[in-house]
Length: 160
Figure 1 (cartoon, rainbow, N blue to C red):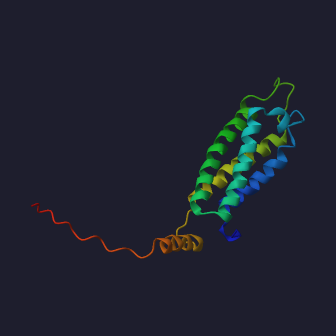
Figure 2 (spheres, rainbow, N blue to C red; figure 1 turned 30 degrees about the horizontal axis):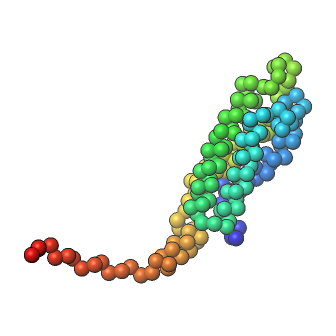
Figure 3 (tube, one colour; figure 1 turned 135 degrees about the horizontal axis):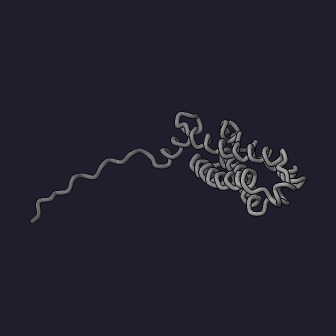
């Protein structure tokens, strides 16, 4: 486990996900939390938090390919979560519009979902091949393969 492999994108996604967990217990709509007012979107929010934390774990413990795959999955889940939260905050608040207010927690949650999505995008964009971890991984793969073999001799195509 090498914490030096964490870059800005993974750190932003992880910090935003941790903040989102806390904000989901705050008031979102009419004094109710996200757990009480968001039916389908809360599933997407929990999935997004789990994806962001998995991105952190895979970045520090596995190969670059697994972290890149998790960043792509986090982006997909984040896009769905962002669309659901934007719809719920901006278009269709729960309950009658005159009675239910949109509280600060909803806007903070919207910003944090966007932060996780932006962090996953930055994690995908920052795939450096000149980083020390990338060079070590390449050298390990080449060491397993061994030295290149000689090509086989050409076949005699002249038939009997």
